[in-house]
Each structure stands twice: as structure tokens, then as C-alpha cells.
Image (cartoon, each protein chain N blue to C red):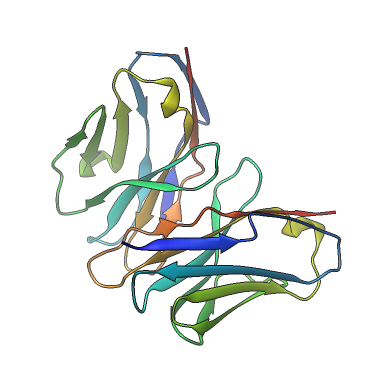
Length: 113
Length: 113
């Protein structure tokens, strides 16, 4: 069966520091991968999605970036965090074709101080 | 443009009551998919159901049931005999011809003992 991992689970970082969040999927090949952010008490905002290695599409211009160095690995990064980057970051995966539901990881709660 | 509206921000019920969560969607596509997700306090989004636009049959799964009506662009979710463990934020989502899942803002359900 497929599983999705995210780490770290929680993170507290000062403004201006770098960020690296990692997401990996096990038990499947060539998944579509997604990064979402959920601000406190709000809905989900799609940040990036990827349909293959090295293929990244950005949905929202910001100081975040994403990379997909391996088939089942998706990384969210920032060179300098802003206070507004605080939130709950969720990684998700699905397969193309007829299967459209996305399966979400446990999330990373980021607090920028 | 695609849009999902969950007008109920928060619902509070007493255990064993039935509760319906409303979802209204907008899309210009004739083929689309609708989803419900549950987000318990732990934060991870749990996939509940997917419904295709060409299948208007209602679905029942245990205490959960879903009513899909294309005529009113609604995809409502009913929990029968609610339990404390049903307390969570519930999201309705739409996917049409793009890679994106469009989420509603969520409905927080509190089931009191």
C-alpha cells in the first residue's frame, strides 16, 4: 500500500532563516505531487504541483520554491522566511488518469517568529 | 471559474443528532469530480468520497451519506447519528479539467456528548 511521509512535523524558525520541508511517497511510481498551505482557520491553498522529476508548476508567486529531485520526493524551500509563511503545510499525491483523489500527508506545522 | 462554497462555517450538534454539511460548486466543465475530506484535530486530511459529474446516484457508507444534485450544483454530506469522533473540519472540493483541486473554506463540526 502507499504511504506518504512529511518531516519535520513541527518547526519554529526565525524570520529571514531558510526553510526545507520534505515529502516522500512510498509504494507507487510517477505520482503527481502537490504542496498546499493552510493558514490558521482557513482553507487550503495550492502552492506547487509536479507531474514528474524536475517538472514544477507554481500556483502562487511568493518567496517559496519547490523541487522534485527524485520520482517520489518533493521538497519545499525558502531562502528567507517571512512571518506570513507561518501555517500548516501539507503534501499530497495522486496518480494521473482516472484516479483523481489526492492523498495527504500528516503535515508540517511551521511557525515563523 | 471554478468555485466551491461551504456557507456553514461551524456547526454544533449533540451526539446522536443527524447533521448535514452543505456544499455548492461552480464550474463550466461538463466533466468534473467532487470530493469530501475530513480534517481531524491531528491535521491530516482524510479522503472520504469522490463523485463523478455523470453519476448522480446518492451514496451511503455506514453513517455517512452524500446527496449530489446537478440541478442545484450541490453535493451535500449527511452524518446520521453523529458521534464525538465525527468532530472535525470537513472540506468539499472540486476538480474539473485542471490539475487543481479547488477546496471550499471548510465547515467545522463539533459533536457534543
